[in-house]
Amino acid sequence: MSFERFISQRFMPRRGGGFSGPLSVIAVAGIALGVTVMVMAVSILRGFQADISGKVVGFGSHITVSSFSGQLAYADAPVGYDSRLVESLRATRGVRHVQCYANKGGMVKTADQIYGIMFRGLDAGYDTTFYASCLTDGRLPDLSERASNDVLVSTTIASKLGLAVGDKLRTYFWNGDGYRSRAFVICGLYNTDLTEMDELYVVGDLRQVQRLNDWGDSLVGGYELLVDDFDHLDETAERVVEHLPYDLQMVTVRQANPALFSWLDLLEANITLILAIMCLVSAVAIVSALLIMIFEKSATIGLLKALGACNRSVRRIFLIKSARLIVWGVLIGDAAALALSYVQWRWHLLSLDPESYSMAHVPVEISVWTYVAISLGTVVVCMLALLLPARYISGISPAKTMRVEN
Image (cartoon, rainbow, N blue to C red; front, top):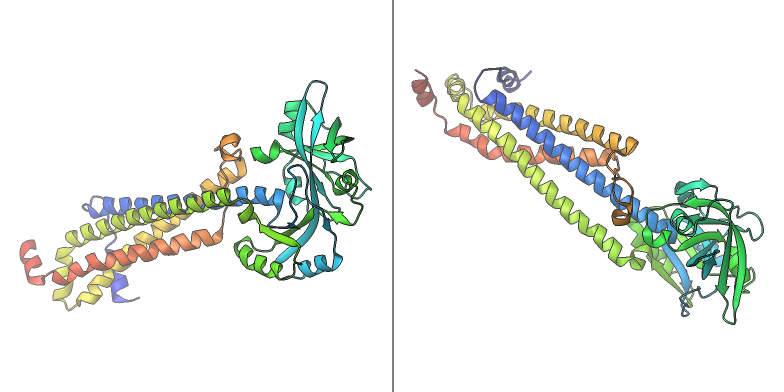
């Protein structure tokens, strides 16, 4: 054990031993509080971003490839299904899955109401993980059958029209020269808390849209691409464009929803401000504790210098002691943040208004890297803040401190 570490252990404040003891406890508590707030703020932000973007991607995928032709408000312009293009897109680096879709606007008619909808047709290879996670009752449509009549309806639409699983859904679609009617069967109910989506979409079989539009099996509304890493969406989109023919266009989910993602990016600026303030609070707390400790131990500092200890060794004694306080504060803060995050993730104690926040509870993303980054950042900032007050030790004279002590 080094000389500095041996002495620093004897500097641990005892009860009733002056101001440094209680102030050290306050410093540890301040650091712990700062770390807890920072971790929770980042965890909630990441959870909020992941929840919102996941719901938007669930309805529209990461990348959408569609026709350059003008689209009607109630239908997609058709795209010829090209198996070679699909295989080329699947082989593109960063692309995880390629699927087909088609949208067609229509109306639902009940005994006393008429309600406008957008029928979203999915192909048999569609990734329905998102819809399965939002399912509240019933089951997903069976897309393996030929032109299945099963449809998935949101709880919002079902509540407004007084419908339930197993009921008939009588719909009417405009086809340019007249209306075509279909009687679907509600096989399940879903809820995403995204009002714009829940009030509009009915999910069913792509082959129903093809029949309504007289497309046959060779035409679809477009292709949807899911990527491996959302953080590298733009790079993947650039590679996808290279494979597209001249008559197809590509839109990323960020380009399709600029206001939403600009709002999510703006939240990061607020989190950055919170991190800066909490780091400052932690630094002030530990610096205050160090200064009080130096003032109380000035006689000991003078004695150590008189016995031959250099300024560097004495500074290391106090920095080692302060580092212990910082580490304890960080560990306590991480433990508190992890406990709070788990409780919220498991039992959803903090609820939200779905109409205002598009989610029913406060989302939390528990990430090891968040804890590691904030913990290391707090330790580094606090240790750097200690370098300046630690230099005060160099100005302490052994003769003066021992004279004052006498």
